[in-house]
Image (cartoon, rainbow, N blue to C red; front, side, top):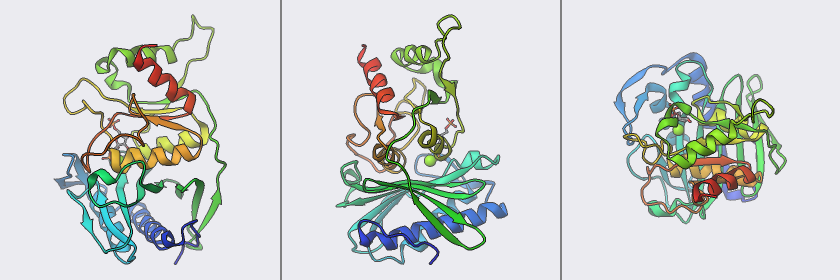
Length: 306
Ligand SMILES: O=P(O)(O)OC[C@H]1O[C@](O)(COP(=O)(O)O)[C@@H](O)[C@@H]1O
Ligand SMILES: [Mg+2]
């Protein structure tokens, strides 16, 4: 086993080992250039899949099915819950986040959340998550995750085949950086268009506006966010298919929000923390704003109209 990590809950040790071993397998495929073309299939959300999406999904199922603590797995790439055992914990997965970015060499990754007391879709919520984080498949294989309130970075040593895990400070930096797909600006609600322009306001050239970053790969944007600070946003837009944004609550928004909260940050769908949004469907979409707590509070205030 290449991971030696002791969770504050020792029952999770095998789950981490399974997740990290799948991350290694997917990264090895990506480095070979495997699966970097469109597949004939689509996923539950109607997105086009690339072959590596399917390879990644199968890699996680292979390793997680060997741990008898895993009850259900919900994956972006599968329609319903898959039952693996009668164990106490369930896993939510985006097995390959940023797959279209991967096609052009931008770092992709995978997102995971570990939930307790999950039996049906509504249980995969922000109260039941106990671990959440993501891998980045970039120049190196990295992991960023919150084990309960404790935040860690993992770096895979490709020569030794082992992971170095280091604790991260539980406070994130707070640069004025915005990660958003501005292509939808004209179809955002008016309050968001106004708030966006306020972040870019130079006050006649006297003030530095927010800087802009958009990898179109949530894991890459969240890595930058937790290392530098700012705001990551994928809002709703008045455009067919984007009425609830683009990102999925259970396996993208909640795990990332859990991690960022452990670093002192916050999240919102515009009205409430993403960790408080009721889950009605495993694949439901939600508007997403994640970042420094004061910046997220400003977004909620802008939506309320003050
Ligand atoms: O192409 P857009 O609209 O910029 O969307 C990019 C967003 O979609 C995602 O790629 C999510 O979609 P996938 O999980 O299907 O890869 C995010 O990683 C990223 O933030
Ligand atoms: Mg994704």
